[in-house]
Image (cartoon, rainbow, N blue to C red; front, side):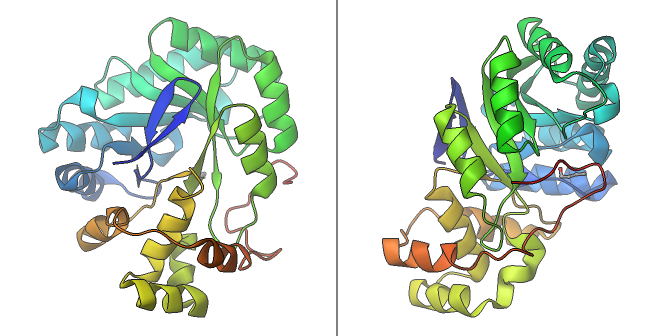
Length: 272
Ligand code: 1BO
């Protein structure tokens, strides 16, 4: 598995996203993914599945230190004291002494960012996380966070797929030595009949989803496709035996459009 290196972290370029996976189905998909070769699992307090992610990992028989596990702190726990307590609760649910990557799930303007980042960095120095980062941060918020955080931030996890232009966020990540981790990397399945991706896929004997994931990985992005279908797991990691040409990469970049964003909430920041 290829790795994305960022401020000391080595993040496997494909991971399993678990947003909206729950209960036994979640544990089963995590177990199966690890058996098939995944070494990166992404969860969050808000997904209500940390317990099952831990169960799936233990059931897989893969050693804990071989798997890169990310969790994210929900915004109502951003006050410093609360943050530490909530991270400890996540670790109890996961049954792990530490996660590999701990993220702030969304910006929360109600709590001063520097205070939350101080607590996040403290969680790292206490050994609760090997690395820390942010999610759903805009360029301005990345810049503010990098300046305010006493420890290096290794990533911004954001929605990214061919229909959403993330050039500005990507650039800010590169400038700050951070990785971009892409959630919804196949646009929640909306790419599957895209004529450009279908055509490139036909030439390459790959599916549109594989073309999409390969396009991300070639940008040094780590992608975390979610699937509840076991057969899709193998498809999503079978992308390391071919390379898209510059022209193919450009054709896919041109698919972005202003209405491409799929995940937006009232509490989201003003996007770039
Ligand atoms: C509310 C969840 C967004 C993606 O992590």
